[in-house]
Image (cartoon, rainbow, N blue to C red; front, side, top):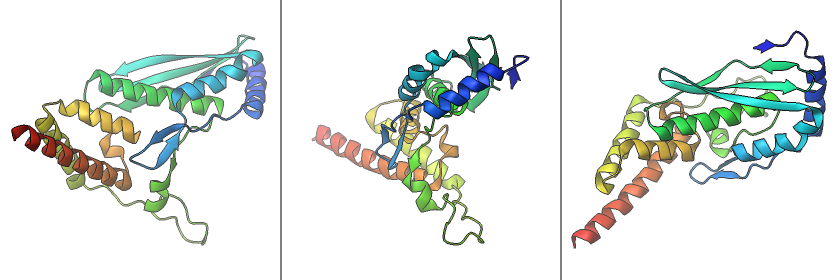
Length: 219
């Protein structure tokens, strides 16, 4: 992280912003994963509502490095002070426009929220069910670790993407990017076991419907 020689006025403005900002509603819904989060547009709206009055502004610079895309966020104050945050980079599984776009949107939302103190993370019932949430019943015990996703599960997911694409005559990468966006995950390998199981369940339903449609067309 880089800053101007002093950030006194900027820090005061940020403190006042964080004290007075109205936290945006988690209106974006992941129907497959029983979770809600604050979409990027709501984060931006919450910041714009207060930041300008306090002399705060920001810029976000998109980055592209090898197989990663990301964002560099800079917060400035009318006094001339600034904070330049370290780049936030995400891996892109495939070099598709949709994949890069989804990763950039995630990076923008994540870094803006972190920089301004906006609560935008998911309310994920699945994480609680899988043991990601520390137990409050016994503080002496270590919190349960989420079950690991096996390579076989990941391979099964990719095989289902291909099967569905073959049936529908679509593009496997586009289907994968669509499911990643719905799951709000950076890559399938980063997903939790609960998320992967939900992806598999959803794909099973989609494949079954696609086969029914294919059978009807043949008749």
